[in-house]
Image 1 (cartoon, helix red, strand yellow):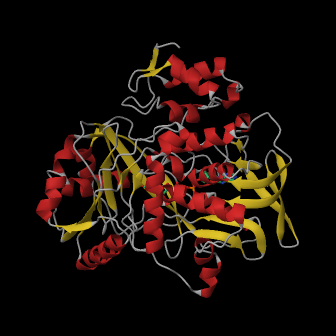
Image 2 (cartoon, rainbow, N blue to C red; image 1 turned 180 degrees about the vertical axis):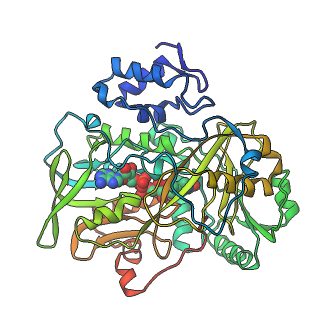
Image 3 (cartoon, rainbow, N blue to C red; image 1 turned 90 degrees about the vertical axis):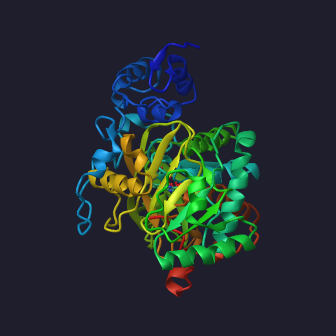
Length: 495
Ligand SMILES: Cc1cc2nc3c(=O)[nH]c(=O)nc-3n(C[C@H](O)[C@H](O)[C@H](O)COP(=O)(O)OP(=O)(O)OC[C@H]3O[C@@H](n4cnc5c(N)ncnc54)[C@H](O)[C@@H]3O)c2cc1C
């Protein structure tokens, strides 16, 4: 295996690129995510061309398929204090964003092999939900499954999130799901042979207003009932956990030491790799374009590579789910909302928990690579499938972060990106059967917390699908509830 460095920032070798190709990652975006090349301080300026040349020479793609990865602002590593000094007009919505992500991927990336003409189960969406479900179905012996993904693995929210995993929720259902997911994450390396970099440094929630403080207090009592050791703490106790926090304007805080952060990308590789070993097909660069329906059933899923006849279809396409459901004349109440996020240069470990100001939606944590990773919702963000990055976000984020942690002003932002939250009216998912199209199963609407819910939800969904036994989850969170008004609001949403 060649140890010659191809990406000096991230220590990625020629051998690592060959390993990625041997695993089937042959386009530049996938190889970036699988190896980490191009994510360091030079943002691919010194290595992308060399990797592309290797892929063109040694990979199976035609030259037209070797496309540069989406560039991430800022152009140069830039100190947060500079961004924080920029004026922001909070009365106006954010405008635009660069660069726009691809709505469709080049035909040259489409696999050359034929798509299966039928499968028992077709899963639409190769994000964490779809892949976790396919994995769990395989554990139950169900391998006649095809996962359809329009882009590369990690193209959707699952490859763009903050990696936060927490048990601090406002409803019993979500607390129990998150507890189970975190237990599963702890054994992920053993089960799937891949390191997901779980670090249980806790979640520290800060409240700036009395109403949010009351919410933290009420929910802390609920957590304790479920055996989650959340506690309300003083400002001094919060500063003991995160030295240097100003706690400016903060009236109370809650802390659960068992919450944590993970690195999202390996989950997708781990699930996908296991599925492939079991004979499940994971078809990337395959766009679902429609359905053939008759007699209250979906008969076929149409794609840009042909049709697949199937017994069951699962719609797990995250923020794209409403537009895909529409192709079968099904109306979902979900709305996509852009959420922006950034990552800084790596620092020595200094930040234990993920810290979030619940009132403003600011959150930040330190990854195992040492970067500060953080985001902040924008109340003015309009609904839409927009994944561009704005200067406004990085300015608002830097201001809010420096209010609580002024010493990070000199830290440089390396890259920013965006993804879409898949927002439902009550902040809870859409699960189970579709009224009127019985074999179309829904698995979307996870707002900004689907990553941490996926292992547990997929485990239960596979059991429900395989055994047909009643599981309250798929009735309680059914699409029905929006027409019958039985909403169950989750109030611990960041952003
Ligand atoms: C900035 C940000 C931060 C977040 N932070 C956290 C966090 O800290 N913790 C947490 O738990 N969650 C977080 N989330 C939410 C989490 O990422 C999502 O809830 C989760 O990844 C949703 O997974 P999914 O599989 O449902 O959707 P996705 O990962 O979006 O997957 C859906 C897939 O469907 C594919 N698709 C779309 N249309 C088609 C089509 N026509 N044909 C075939 N495929 C199609 C897409 O390409 C996509 O890959 C965050 C989200 C964002 C955007």
